[in-house]
Length: 316
Image (cartoon, rainbow, N blue to C red; front, side, top):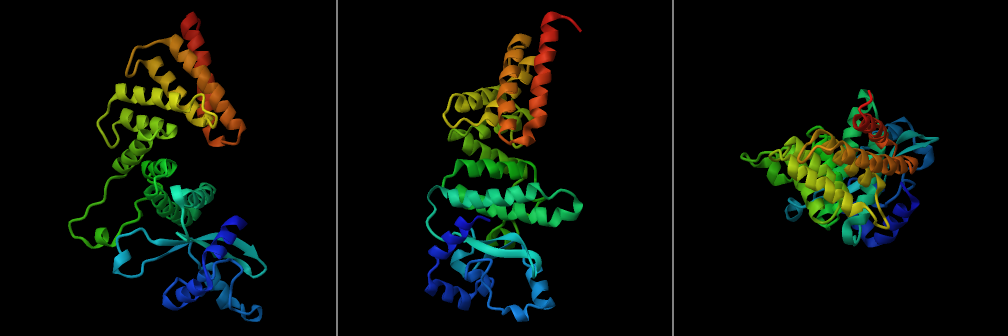
């Protein structure tokens, strides 16, 4: 967690607020005082029991105080992994919301930190911690989405599309207690969030929504509509000063696949080759910038260029 988050937390919370939180029910006095270094336990008393408690800190914690906040998104306390002479564990370093956050960018920043941590937790032995990271990210992204952040809707769609929380999603008290309540399927949740982002001109949401529409996940399958969404994603991102090369490349790759196989429109190897070339250039640039998780798509685009050249020449 960055020092900027710590300083933001310490500046936003006054002494009176800290005292009130300590008295009236924050998860702990240490969290209420807002930092990994804050502890009222003298170093000489930090024995085995203290270390076990520290190691037992969760990935996140929520405050739900009073009926008036029962159906709102909760305040979430975020933590980071630590390693010091006292032992390894987690420390709570910030909370959200802790001040005005127009556009939800602070929540998005904290959520991205959790997502990055979850991506590094591979294997069954890290399953519990990985799910908790995605759960924390979901709550933060819901906060950001409430503030109109299209990028947060995109990240939420990715979490729901892949069922990254494995069914352990945030539910309000009414949803938890009502006998007639039913969970919305993950595909439908992803469709709704991607639709919001696409409506507000978010390129990645457009091509990801196209994938759902093409596969009939969360909606009726429609290859022609999916092709239109891929075109829209490419034109939204292409030529912008802050162009997302990964989104441009993924949209071009999907257009190339569609033209190669004739899905949603006419079949054309020449047009497919052109789109494969654009995809290879854009995805190669994204890979060089550190977006290594698109390496498979980049290699597919390069192979597609060679394959279309063979199809056009008729030489196999």
